[in-house]
Length: 109
Image (cartoon, rainbow, N blue to C red; front, top):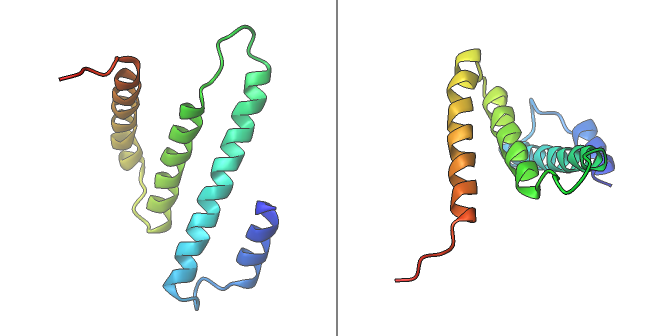
């Protein structure tokens, strides 16, 4: 269904003459499709992982957010190799921080 909506939207709109709201809608559609594709790919990968070690849904969300940010940077012409090198440690530190906080029990005051 998402691919049909994407095909119709991107096939019938012209980004050169479209208002900016259409560009935002197109970006949201692209990120939604990207999230679905990442989720499906990781679900297929989970089928081939033996035992209880599965890829968590948080990994799917993290990959989607990272790819959405990269897509946004590329679409405004601000993506270079140096940007990716600077972005990678930020993502690694952020994912470690989020996973560390989820594992710790909540401290009551």
